Image (tube, rainbow over all chains, first blue to last red):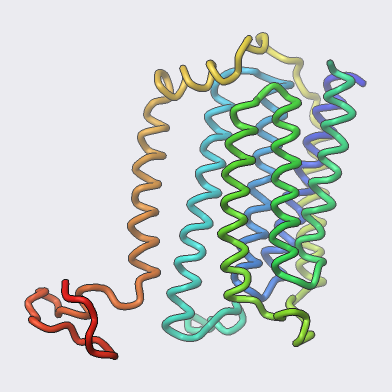
Length: 104
Length: 189
């Protein structure tokens, strides 16, 4: 198997992870499950970054980008949980369909 | 070496996708958490095969802890505890599936249609040294911003999640001698 095909296979896996994550983030009612979808999208980004580092340019840039993606994941989790707790305290809302205050 | 990468990398990739799909298929939200953890660990395995041991370790450790925390929140906000209240947990499933498949189709088409360049440069002897030198040298600004960002996240996470802070208990100027608690007898400041 050539390097290019292997890169394409891994990037296809990354695309599948991103697609699954988009499906989850859009379809789930529970706020926590929506966050799981977003996590899965970032998981795909991680894999894409790793594959690009190994097969295209094994320089430091790609590794720093992967670190940033990991940090984004942590920040997303913290803010997501904090917002979930805050909206539950204020309105007893734990599903996205119930959070309709900004519905025009 | 390439064969190892091919076999292990692609099989772990399939495991990651299958577990990723399982997150939204299994009934129990606790099981979904562990499916997501499995997906992350598979990606960490791919990192290990691709000569990035440090990032693999960080991903594996961070995601294990993150999913342990996630499991607690999952149980707190569980919609269908112990399968006792069967209910649909999705909305607009068809439209979402279309969006997900569309995103996958566009990305996959791009992956297979682009004429990828060959690798420029050679892999470093030790990828961890490469990353360490980068974030302590040329890319230090990134690390500084990441540090400030994480600190801001800690503060705003705490502020958002706190139900009644000291300003609620002691007034806007913090001068109240006794805190106004729903149940008296709370600790003084």
